[in-house]
Image (cartoon, rainbow, N blue to C red):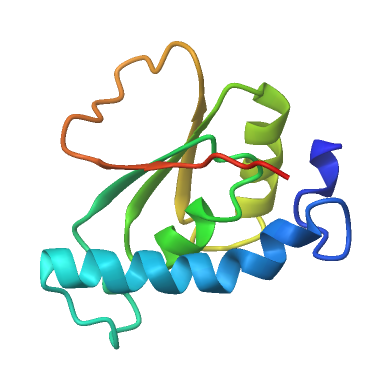
Length: 120
């Protein structure tokens, strides 16, 4: 099923439908907290965000496009592979993905955690 993460009409349609609202909330909240201008195209420049439970990267990738150093982490290796494949379509390659467990040398001490929990 994880190969359908980026199909906005597929099984993850609810995620895609609420993504604009979620991203607007995250943008306004982080901009307010870090005193960033939400009108700027890349207001998250200088911020590091760890998206725990990133799935196929449908939140991590837009956050990276907004300037964040976004790292997507997921326990399901196939989901991370889907996120990596999708990011490769973007020439800027905005996201760094890894899997649980074993973050290796990644240091998340100064990152903003973003936990994704879904109940449908």
